[in-house]
Amino acid sequence: MQRRYRKYHKSPLLSAHVLSFVHHSLSNCTFTHLDHFPRSILALCRMKLNEIQRIDVEAVLDIKWLTRTQLNECPTLGIATASGNLLVFSLQGDTLVSVTELNLCSELALSLDWNDGKQSSSPIEVAVSDQRGHVSVLAMSSEGALEVVESWKAHEHPAWITAFNYFDTNIVYSGGDDCRFRGWDRRTGCSAPTFVSRRHDMGVCSMQHHRTNDHLLVTGSYDETVKLWDTRAIRQPVTEVNVGGGIWRLKWNPSNDHQDLLLCAAMHGGFHVVQLGEDESSLDVVSSLDTDGELAYGASWCWDPKYPSLVGSCTFYNAERQLWTSFDTPQ
Image (cartoon, rainbow, N blue to C red; front, side, top):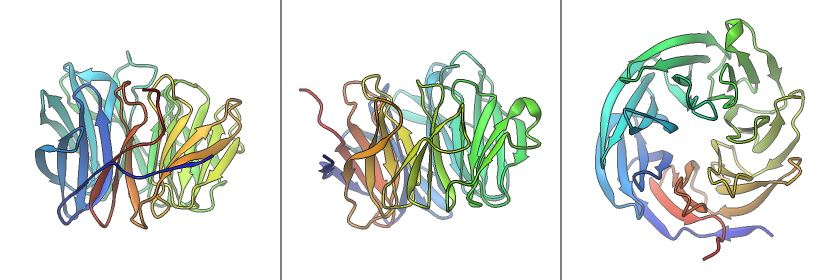
């Protein structure tokens, strides 16, 4: 039976729009960004959302931690901005410090993904998609310097999302406003996609490879469906579920005991937790957070294993952050 949850802690944030929310367990802190074109505010908060740092940055479209490796032994944060920049910050104690930035284009940088899945010993790389329809892969040195390794035209319209295959980071996926989901093999120079899927009816704006299962990938679209794919047989999805809203972000639970749970930010459809069936052939919504019509955009699991059900989320027009438990855990 599906559970519906109310937020147990919320925090308003000035007169800006909120698009992203991420958590890092090492510092017991969360980061949100407030989108108020042409500038944004990056807020560093404690678990109860008490703000401890605020930084004025460009408007932010995506924000992700480098989770399995660190830069100079510090937690590292990547940010894709509306000016086409990739910003990199490190968390030094309780302070977010700028490391580097690189401009990729004059239009929106829309998403990013680090290559820090199972191949954590490989050089650090980050993939970025942008409004031109391009996907770029950048290498980051041990000192934090960024260099573009590859860049190619992936879509004729904005490339809303890109993601690495965490088990083979030569493989990169992308989704665009052209309703296409595409795969790319960097060893071929990305002159042509390895596949093109037209199974989504509207723009593909979210995706993530599973962190422990080498052949599972999920995609989400404005068509309101989450689709599960087996990358060994990509011609058609394994299954799908409709969540009642366009899907801006999808994130697998990082806890070893809950890797079958997928967090979904579904715009006007609210936030949902979707469960993968034991046989990997079904997706079911098992809990939801009603946003009372506010657009659900940013969402992140807590990476602290003591709080596997804790979710940080944020909604758009009312500029609100929420902290809530998405399922019951043993006491």
